[in-house]
Image (cartoon, rainbow, N blue to C red; front, side, top):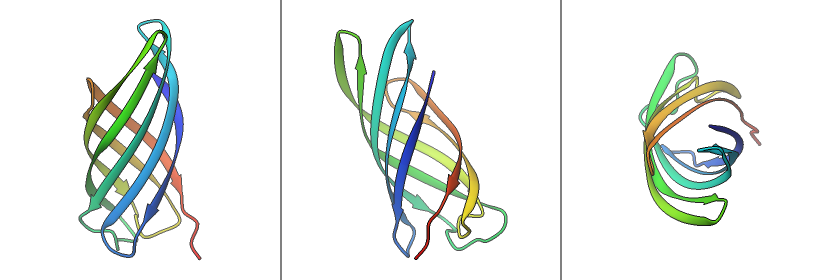
Length: 109
């Protein structure tokens, strides 16, 4: 269990590249995790409702005494993906079960 921050770049199309870092606890020991993912949105132009997406990539997990790399696959939904704010919910696998719930802010030029 942990908490973290991420940053993502979304091209005008359906793709998104993201990087996140998380710190927390794993079996009572301090742990950190970094992820680099590429996502694909089904309906990125929606201003209301939600859009499903899939993402895949790699993660590096650091726990006291060692580290390991993992492949990550996830499915998620994002609310109002074409607007400046919204929530997201993800579930997936990557060295065990992986879940994420969060809020996003988007800066547009």
